[in-house]
Length: 346
Ligand SMILES: Cc1cc2nc3c(=O)[nH]c(=O)nc-3n(C[C@H](O)[C@H](O)[C@H](O)COP(=O)(O)OP(=O)(O)OC[C@H]3O[C@@H](n4cnc5c(N)ncnc54)[C@H](O)[C@@H]3O)c2cc1C
Image 1 (cartoon, rainbow, N blue to C red):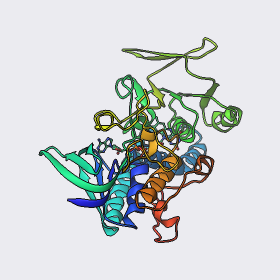
Image 2 (cartoon, protein in one colour):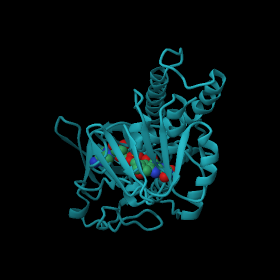
Image 3 (cartoon, helix red, strand yellow):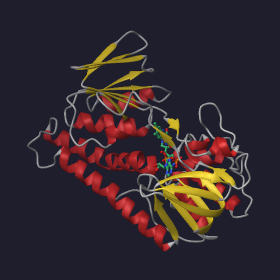
Image 4 (cartoon, rainbow, N blue to C red):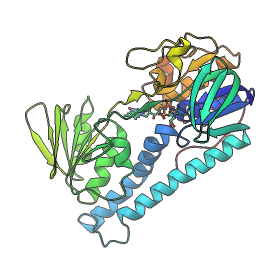
């Protein structure tokens, strides 16, 4: 099979690259797991909880106490709604990509040579030939979270049952939202956050029952009965689970990049220039695999990589990318060429 562009990885960067690439030619999008990557595991559930957190807190105030297991509105029911929103997102994404002519191939991709990608979907490797390749394989979770009582923020946003108590370590909006949602159900919650906004976060969340601590976690110990989270001032917080927001490791090993001569930094990040070109012509990289710090930057990088791969020289201005809020499917709409209403779940 021959394509103008082959994109490996269907997270925020890969989706925007595929959407932008489809405006100019034929695109294959290779995904090892599920469409959306971290954007759908993290940003979509966080947006769901963000929408319900306010009304839930209001309901809790009216009830004059925490939500109770017997209440009509249960955590499990909301978790099911959240999961339905995630599934609906993926179904709509598949439909929109199909309408745009993007061919989705499920399997693990690797770059065999410039212009040649192997895809292993479990039934032997198939070969794809393409003019250009974009690697957008994101990050994977470090070992040490993703099981037991230490839970990655992405996993906590996907919880189906409430813990007895929690320490949430994280400074951005998904961590704050999670802490508020747990507190609404009367779960004892500590939020450990860094940065200038901690005082404002404390004012907002402490009324809802979240105990806010400024600083960074210095250590976490896990035992059979729970976790102990240590803070810089020596305070030890005890809880059922600790939710941590770890940066993850670039998912670039085993892709064949080093064999090909693509420059990769010691930590695994693919080296790119402002056009998202790697050191090997015809091979581009975008998103967290190339060091993008946020979803917005990942989306812009995917867009810039696709435009350059299609022969339209675009340069990414990092400061602009950080400022503009954008979702993967806005990438095409940005240019006014197509208009896709594809935002957060409603
Ligand atoms: C710990 C953590 C902290 C974060 N913090 C922030 C933050 O502060 N602000 C913010 O805006 N966003 C944050 N994010 C969100 C992150 O920026 C988004 O996940 C963003 O969407 C990254 O997009 P991506 O496309 O680069 O990678 P991902 O979303 O990781 O997508 C990569 C995709 O590639 C697939 N893949 C991997 N290897 C292969 C292969 N060999 N073949 C085929 N497919 C493959 C994966 O299955 C995945 O679907 C954070 C995410 C994490 C995990």
